[in-house]
Structure formats: C-alpha cells, structure tokens
Amino acid sequence: MIDSVQSHPFAERLPLVEQMHGRTVADPYRRLEDPSAAGTQRWLQDQDDHWLTYAGTLTNRFGWKNAVRRLSSVGSVSAPVRRGGRSFTLRRAADQDHAVLYVDETPLLDPKQLDPTGLTTLDAWQPTPDGSKLAVQLSRGGDERSTLSVLDVATGLTIDGPIDGCRYSPIAWLPDGTSFYYVRFRQVRHHQLGVRDDSIVLDGEASYGLEISADGRWLTISAVRGAGNDLWLADLTTDAPPAYVPQDATTVMSVGPDDRLYVVTTQDSPTGRICVGDPAEPTVWHDYIQPSGPLTGLAVLDEVVLVGTLSEITVHDRETGLFRSAVELPGLGSVGSLSAAGDQAWFTYTDSVTPPTVCRYDARTGQTAYQGEVRATVETHRLTTSSGVELQIIGKPGPRPTILYGYGGFGQSLTPTYSAFALAWVEAGGTFVTAAVRGGGERGTASHQAGTRRNKQKVFDDFVEAAEHLIGTGWTTPDQLALCGESNGGLLVAAALTQRPVLFAAAVCSAPLTDMVRYEQSGLGARWTAEYGSAQDPDDFNSLLSYSPYHQVTDGVQYPAVLLTSFGNDTRVDPLHARKFCAALQYATASHRPVLLRHEADAGHTTGGINLAADMLAFIADQTGLCT
Image 1: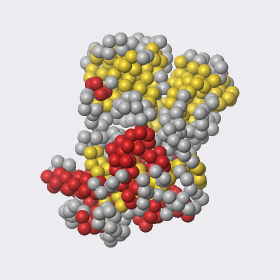
Image 2: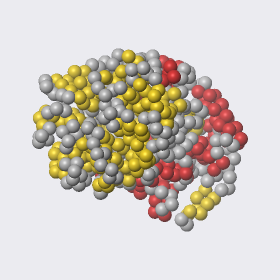
Image 3: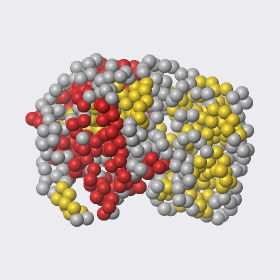
Image 4: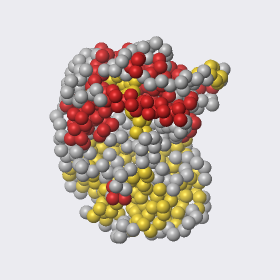
C-alpha cells in the first residue's frame, strides 16, 4: 500500500475566494476545470502515473479481471419488438462488447462492423409500424451525442439522415412510415423522409417523451417540469396545435389500441395509479387500476391489460381493470419493460444470480415461457434499518469485507439485478449490499421528493445509517467497509466520505458530481435543478454548499482510501468534478491511505467495462483486506 501523504502529485492551490449570497466560497482548484490547459494536462499525466504505480502493486488485479470476464460471459437478448410480421431484438454473444440488432434471425446493424475500434454505440432504435424501416441513433466514444439515420430493413441501406442533435430521442412513427415525430436540440419536431427542413411542433427546450396511437391519430407529449411534468395531446387529423393538459403531478398519457386514453399519474397516489378516459376529453379520467407498487410498464393486449411494477406483473380485465391473476416469474427479481402484440407480451427478468432473460406471457393459456441460467449460488438477505432504509444483501453473514452501493436520485430504483461486479466480489468471500435510500424510486414519488433539492442531505443520512446498521449488526466493520457509487451515486459516496470518514476504509466514486456550487455550469447540470436546486437561489445555494463534497474537504482529516474514475467523453458529468475533488482530498488527507484518479480519455459516462470493474474490485479488496 502506497504512503499517500508523501506520494500524491502536486496541484497548485489558488487563493481564489468568492462571495455568493453573503457566504465566502473558496475554490482553490478552479484551474483544473479546463482540460486543455497545460497545467491540467500535466497534472492528469501525473495522476495517471500515480494510479499505474499503485495498480502495479495489486497482485490480484488480473485475477479480478478474469473473474469479471467469466461472470460477464453470459450474453444477452432483449425482449422482441414486433412490427409488421418482423421481430426486432438486440443480441450480444458472450464474447461481444456490443449488442447486435437483429431482424428475425438476420443481423441488421452491428456497431463493431461499423467501427472496428469499438467506440461507436447504438443508443436507440425504433422500427416503423410495418417493420420496413428503422430509425437508429449512433454515438461515438461514449459521448452520447447521437446522430439519427433511417435504414431500409430489407437492404440495410441508409435512406435518410444522418441528423445530429438527437440525444436518446424518442421516435413516434406515423403509420405509413413516411414521417415521424422526434426530439432534436430538445425541441419536438416532425420529420418527413427525404425533406431537409423539419417542422417544429414545440419549440420550448425540455426533456420530452413522445407516444403515438396505433392508428396514428393521437400524439401525446410529455416534458419534465420540476416535481411533475407538462402534457400535450395532439389530434393529428386536424391542423390544430397540441392541446395543453394542465397537471400538478407526474402524469403520462397514451391512447391504446382500443381508442381509450390510458393515464398513469401520481396525482393522489405516491406510487402511481392508472386511469382511463376519452382522448377527446383529456382532462376527464376515472380510476381503473391501483398498482401494488411503483409502475414500470403497461401493456394492452386483446382481452387483458398487464401492469408491471418493480418485482411483479399482474393481469387485469381490459374492460373493467379488475385483477385476474399474477404472471408467473422465475423468482424474486426485477422485471423489465413490457412489449405486446395481440394476446402475447414479452418482458425481461433478472435477479442477483440470473442474467437478464426474455420471458413470454401468453394470455390465452396464462402461461409464462422463460429460460435462464444460474451462474452462481449465493445467499441473499433483506434488512431494514430503524428509519426504513431497505438493504439488499448478497453474501454470508460477517463480519466480512463489504461493498455498500447506492444511488439515491432522479427517482431511479435499485432492484435485484445480475451484476458480474457484485458476483465476483461475493464469490471471493465478500458481501455486497445495495441500499434503497431516499431520492430513488423504490418507494414511489414521495420518497423521491423526500431526497431532492433542499432535502438532499436526507439521502446521505440514509446511506450513513445503512453503513452504521451493517456495522452494528455484525455484517462488517469500519476497516472492512467500502462505499461505491456512480454519477449521482458518486455524489452520494463523496458526501458520505466527507461527512463520516471514520466509518469507511475505502470509497469508489465513478463519474461523480462533487462541486455542487458550480454543477449547473458544465455537462448536463443545467437540466438537473429540479433534483438539486440552483445555486442562483439563496436557499438552494445554502443547501448545496452545506453538503458539496469538494467544499466539505477539511485539512488534516484522516480520509479513507478513495478511487475516483472519470471519462474524457463524458457529456453528462464533466470530469472536472473528479479532478477538483481528487486534488482537494490529496492535499487535505492526514491518513496514509491513497487518493487516486483513474481517467479514461476515450470513454464516456456509460462505457465502463471489464477492466474498470476489475480495477475497482482490486482497489477495494486491497483496502478492506479481502484475500483472493
């Protein structure tokens, strides 16, 4: 283990202090925000050398790599999307880095064939209703700045595009396949194939969702707004602009194949309820189905409706919404989104030991056909802390070296899922714990809102409580406990380690947010004020500064070992957050545990692979004493 106090690379500290809303805010590493500056580049090279020197001491690094590769070699198949007699699926063989898009049994688009370097990814795709054409969105180097093209399915040739500015755009094809609605530069547009200029439907910039009815008459549009969203409904048989549907909750609308308006809303229901109505009167609904938990999917079949929640799918009478039965699942895991055609539906299932597998439900027989392969046998446990934080535990009772993983933001749910990273750790004798803290979606909208904006500290409190519970109940000890999180989860980990450093031996912050005073000025930060608040607002600012990890680093504190990871093509969370936090910790820490930065210049926010996972595990094992 390296003596971190003596070996950390040097970074110049500036006496930069600003006055904001009557508060003094220091920013000694502002210069590291500029990746092109010569000083930043030299510092990054020094950090790379520092990381490689430490990594060279990890004798089990390649063993972890082999374990993650073996457990990752399971392949994957997506639930099919059926259009016009054709079936579209994504398939990835065990030895492939990227999934290949198939139509029936024929490969249609292979990102590796398009770009042998492996840097091009297929971000999104959507076939026409008759299955003859396919809109695809591709990006390079993990930057997620997609370009959209249209392919002829029979030939695989490009017949329209490319069109830039389409980051994960929803695509709503008209029935005749000659045009579609989509989102470009955060505006809703209508694109006619072969026509250069689009018509703009909604010009206000937002994160939009689009849904079109099967007959092509009704277009529903949603846009994220604060704790809820805006809604519009357009009758495409008229020239009238989309009609605004007032909302004071999170609501999604779609017109089903039975011409009914289906409405999923959190109005008067924190976990969501389903209503139905007439699209001609989009503000008039009546109750239809009350799901048992946060809704993840809705599929309208010929005679029944399937309702998906985080861990189950229920079957309801299509006319009345009355419960009929539950869909048989392979175990107590997580179900993915639903797709339907006629009287059949498809979804994916996964749990801690089962890789994602496709399941098919037949409404005529009520039977579920599925296939899955158990790759490992592990113990699983569920615990709840005194304040209600739910812990999913994989591994045997301890005390053992333990990884505590969390996210806690944007209403995202952490449910049981197959993870080669987690299984490799557990196979080696460790324990892996996932904490469902406030800010996530595991317990519905109210729990999410309880961890946003000026309530964000409650998320960190939950995570710390989870750590204390694991220590107090004998699952682990402070010398054996490591934290791990990515993106917003990286913020969670960074906040926890600066607030309660003595609780942890190590922490991994991957692509983290750490400077919450300036987060709005880079990456996609300006779009996240509904989650975190804005530093322009005095009360929000006080909240942000109170927990901002970069600003909470204190000289002379014995911080745990920290591994920060960053990616040069990350367009969501700017790598400047990892750089500034790394420099601050390296300067301040009084412990002899290392503070390290592992940077990948040609990777993006979501492109971490086997090497990254292995390095994280090797680092955590070294710092928590897990012997392999």
